[in-house]
Image (cartoon, rainbow, N blue to C red; front, side, top):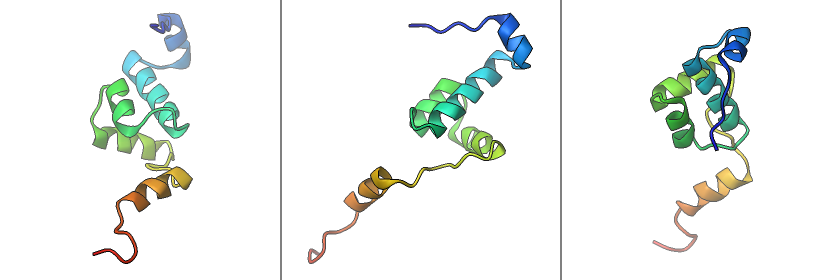
Length: 82
């Protein structure tokens, strides 16, 4: 389902189309709705450019929550195993 934003709406917001895509990608990433790779594809920029955009907006590069620690723990060796 395509989403269309009129030129008038973008103009009122003071955004170009690429800027609007970036803003939306940043907010969806921050809300946990998009992964980093998804957000960079959505915005049409590189990971480094996206990380810089997040930092410019004072948004975290990663969210440290229970799911994050579960995923991190999966990569650790099990206790008592070599």
